[in-house]
Amino acid sequence: MGRYKEIILEILRTAGPVIIAVTILQLTLIRMPALQFLRFLFGASMVIGGFYLFMRGIRVGLIPIGELIGSETPKKGSAILVLVIAFVMGFAVTVAEPDVRVLSYQIDLVSEGAISSNLLVLAISIGVGLFVLLALLRIIKGIPIAYLLFAGYLIVFIISFFTPVSFLPVSFDAGGVTTGPVTVPFIISLGLGTASVLGGRSGISDGFGLIGLASIGPIVSVMILGVIYG
Image 1: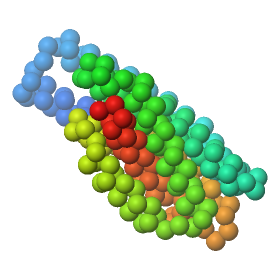
Image 2: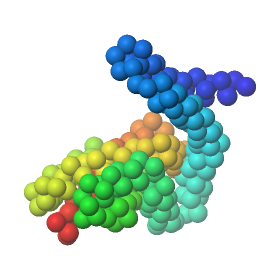
Image 3: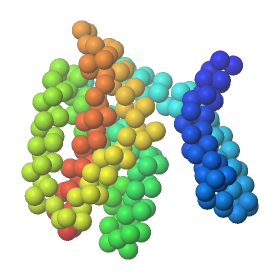
């Protein structure tokens, strides 16, 4: 029961301020129709219930399996296998990320189909997969994260000169949406699992930082997409 209460309190801290703010505005300034406000409250209750199921699913299934994959694959003795699995899993969780779907749908809508939703999801997923691969390579080889961050943003800076202006904001938004509720816990748990089985590695210094690296990937891949199709 303690775990259930913890999750419920976490959800209320997340959704509660929005509900309270809208309620205060309703009672003071906006005064929307009563039916519309009741729909909001009903929708908010559905959001809270959905968040609860989502958080339970993340803690019961996604995080443990990420740590298990990260800790078991290095035991096979093949660095290539670890990197291939890192790419596949990074690609897969990005395809499943709701924030990526929302962004791709909005861009497809605003661009009137000029930037395809499916093509954008594919580009973002490939970018995340490649940089998750690099992040795990950093853990295996003990490469300082500052080197990869510097190189990654240097590449972003250089490609930006060749990227059409219409693709630049899309590229940086693509990097932001990959830090969503599905991608973040899985990639972090994958890194922590990998770092836990490598001798002399720190979970803090090696297991974290993967999201920062992974978010560079979609920026680069969408910029390249812009260079090709722009």
